[in-house]
Image (cartoon, rainbow, N blue to C red; front, side):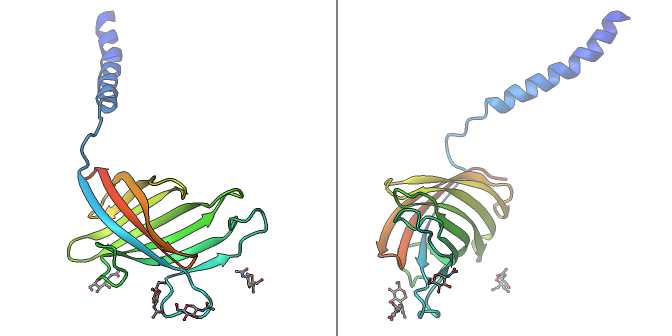
Length: 179
Ligand SMILES: *[C@@H]1O[C@H](CO)[C@@H](O)[C@H](O)[C@H]1NC(C)=O
Ligand SMILES: *[C@@H]1O[C@H](CO)[C@@H](O)[C@H](O)[C@H]1NC(C)=O
Ligand SMILES: *[C@@H]1O[C@H](CO)[C@@H](O)[C@H](O)[C@H]1NC(C)=O
Ligand SMILES: *[C@@H]1O[C@H](CO)[C@@H](O)[C@H](O)[C@H]1NC(C)=O
């Protein structure tokens, strides 16, 4: 009788241990989905309302000379090649703000909204944009629709910039969890 009780107590423990060890051994090597898109940000300069896709919602503070505290809200087109006028395949909607007083760095949080015949759904992305680095990684923290519960990494590279008012980022998005 005592042995039977022990088995009842131990076997659920054993099962849960084996489940958690199976989870820990999950090491994705190849992405299950790979998408490369270009992000175009045209900052409103006070007069180009028809063309601009983003605007400063707060001014920079006087802390340092690198726009510390300036927050930009954007609704930017995402294209498959690096031409601003190519047909957008998604929109990037969110914000970034400058967050260092000694150099240009920003923090991004946005949703990629896909509404095309190819994809319908969203990807939610956030991360630190250390602009002095050749590439930096943002986290793909979730998704909906065709990207239900997706997770992965978006590798960012500054493709070009023209002063403050236009810049283009290459976003190399690799998903490691797809459903
Ligand atoms: C804003 O940008 C537009 C288009 O590039 C340009 O024609 C205009 O002169 C700019 N305005 C200011 C205030 O810089
Ligand atoms: C930013 O500063 C300018 C000039 O000082 C001012 O006109 C404008 O209202 C400010 N904008 C915001 C969003 O605080
Ligand atoms: C997606 O595209 C369809 C067809 O063009 C349109 O009817 C629908 O309103 C769009 N949905 C969103 C959320 O933009
Ligand atoms: C819109 O902005 C882009 C990027 O700054 C610029 O190259 C283009 O000439 C602008 N177009 C108009 C019509 O102002």
